[in-house]
Image (cartoon, rainbow, N blue to C red; front, side, top):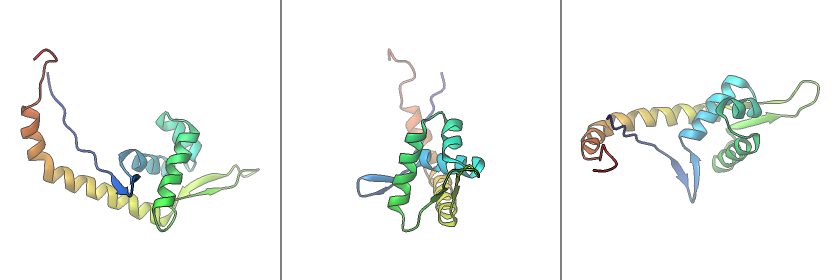
Length: 119
């Protein structure tokens, strides 16, 4: 049995997660779909959950990471702002750097984990 270990980073501001892996994935999905609702569907979450995650991100950064457009004939939508793209790029770079630095430690810790629930 192969044991998988992972490192998950979150940027905290006070008691809130300003950005983490799930919020970064949501930003990526909004970039791809141009819509919070379409991004939520693609990720298998409710629109309300996605909107709440966007709200948390927008409240925790100096500039909004996502801007919505009003609905109507043109259909509304959402876009990740320049600030959002910078945060996303920085977060992904931080994840890669942290994983590279932590990998030897993760490998050693994985050897110490149980591989059988009955062990």
